[in-house]
Length: 49
Image (spheres, rainbow, N blue to C red):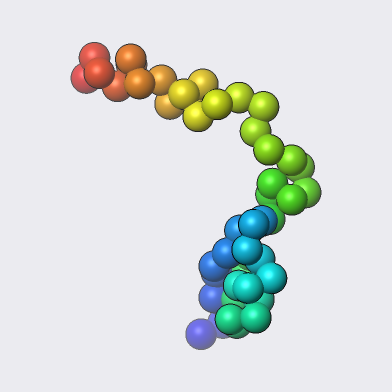
């Protein structure tokens, strides 16, 4: 296996220890989201479907 993707900003050290070769660390670099999830995924719009 060439790429093993696991882990995120909060647990990347453990993921690397466990053999990850690709880790997502966006929050560690860019900081947290400015908007809550419902800004992107509006529950009321989903209820219309």
